[in-house]
Amino acid sequence: MFVDAAKITIKAGDGGAGAVAFHREKYVASGGPDGGDGGRGGDVIFVVDDNLATLADFRYKRKYAAKNGLPGEGGKKHGKNGENLEIRVPRGTVIKEAESGAVMADMSATERFVAAKGGNGGWGNRHFATPTRQTPRFAKPGAPGEEWEISLELKLLADVGLLGFPSVGKSSLISVVSEAKPKIADYHFTTLVPNLGVVSMGEGNSFVIADIPGLIEGASEGIGLGHEFLRHIERCRLLVHIVDVSGHEGRNPIEDFEKINGELVKFNSELAERPQIVAGNKIDMAEPEQIEEFKNYVEAKGYAYYSICAPITEGTQELMNAVWNKLQTLPPIKEYEVQEIPIESLIKDDRDFKITVEDGNYYIVEASWFPKVLKGIDVEDYESLQYMQRVLEKSGVFDALKEKGIQEGDTVSIYDIEFEYIP
Image 1 (cartoon, rainbow, N blue to C red):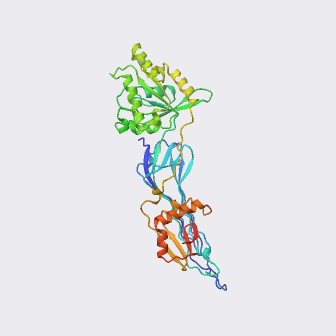
Image 2: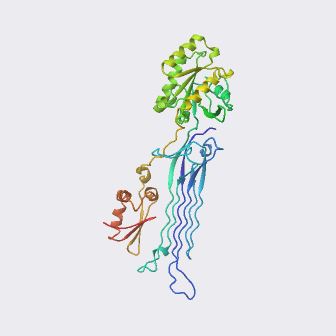
Image 3: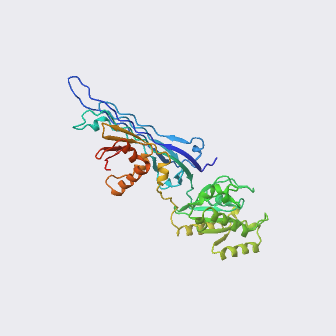
């Protein structure tokens, strides 16, 4: 089954807790704190696998989690880091944050993408020893790993997309101009999966052509299968619109041409602006005046037109030459830019947090949503610190610290960030 969209949840590993331990050795008095740090949680990493062609692996498994880091131990022993989890996807997969739809990565532009970062391990108590705090009996917890609900969309990496109603000859064309061998028959329903073919133009030159399953009127509203595959022409640099000019099934070529273009506008207005070449197919069954009428109509609208009979390759080479020449003037295949995820999607509605007070003036703040929000904080940058302050105020952390009795100069620790409290 061809699966080109999926929604999954990913969870990076939590960092291991730091250890509270003291050096114990015969004849050595007051050995001091020697608790080791916790291990780092594993990352969730997406990897391109060119052997995959669909997202079928995500049809039944929806939750993916990397390993947690192990806690530290006495003797300054560092906890073992959690193993990373690699998730393989076909080239061309676009990864988005599910709620906002923000693009996190385009797996045509990169081979590997760390989608969820594991939490850092907590510090052992040896880090908290000072001249006035010689026996700290606390350690830092590990930071939680990032967790995301994400949507995966496979958008084919094709230079050229073939458009047209079912049974107009798209499969026939791709079979004679490339090595692709789609199933071909004279039926009134559409091909069930997109087909990719490589068209060789000699001397190492080639381009990729995609047979997009046929559209019908209303596809952009969910009628038929066409709307499910319109996403696959979003990357195409050029569209080739195949029309049955013979009208032997009682259809009107001009009406079919306008209906398909209308579906493109409804689905994505940018697609309607994509360069398009029109090919009138099945000329062996058409009257000369039918071909001439359609040709004049299309050219009057500014489109290049070619007559073909795909099964016997009549006119197909001329069409491919025109396609190749046009591609030389067009920009590369579209890549989706990474977008900033809105803060609302980061914090969500669950703003629970926990504050622990150690030794009277050391405040440890824990919250599962902090790492995602604060991962980009640069303590040396003023604007970055202002952003962090707004987050802490908005989430109620500062109010809770005041309720706990925090005083000016006390230390606030939020995982990897520490700062002195200034009211």
